Amino acid sequence: MKLSFAAKRCALMLLPLAAAELLAADPYAEVLKLSFGQSTEAVLAIQAEITAAKPDQLRAIEARLISVLQSPEATQDAKSWVCRTLRLAGSEQCVPAVAALLTDPKLGPDAQFALRSLPGAKADEALRAALPGTSGLLKAGIVQTLGARGDRNSVPLIAALASNTDPVIAEAALYALGHIGGAGREIDFAQLIAND
Figure 1: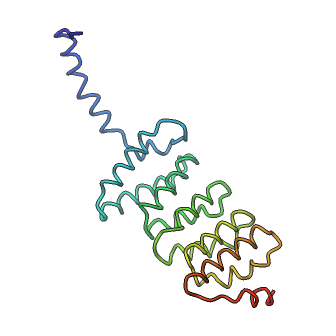
Figure 2 (figure 1 turned 135 degrees about the vertical axis):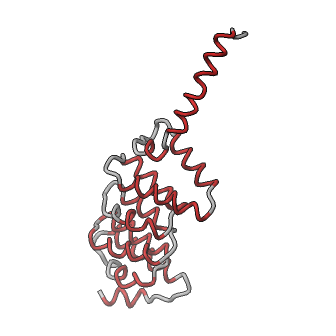
């Protein structure tokens, strides 16, 4: 099917408008409205930006992701996605924003996931600071995250939880202590139990 001259001319006139609209679209503004199961164009655009970024460019991307995370307009799905993305593109710069979600019943697990592999002591400190303000599965998740990070400074806090009346927390504590002990450190479990 051949287009008429007028149709081609009209299409060429609209092309700059479409391109301008695409360029004007800010994926960080769009991702604020993210709803899993909906369009993921903004997510794909940000992921492509992260993949193409040089290390020094990642800090600027991280700052924009932190802005999304802290925005009151961001949906729960947007915050969840940002936490998971910061696990790959984050640094100590994002720890305070992520740590603020550790006690959130819905976003706490995503925050734990983000902090699990972020480098630096700030993540360990944030996890330890959040531990007293949690219970149940959130507390167990933080304990396991500390164990997975091998945070030796958390051993006294975790050891106190090894005999917790909540079996989920007690099991998480034993897992964490075993993991920390398995990192070339000996922990006397019999002594821990005898002290309680």
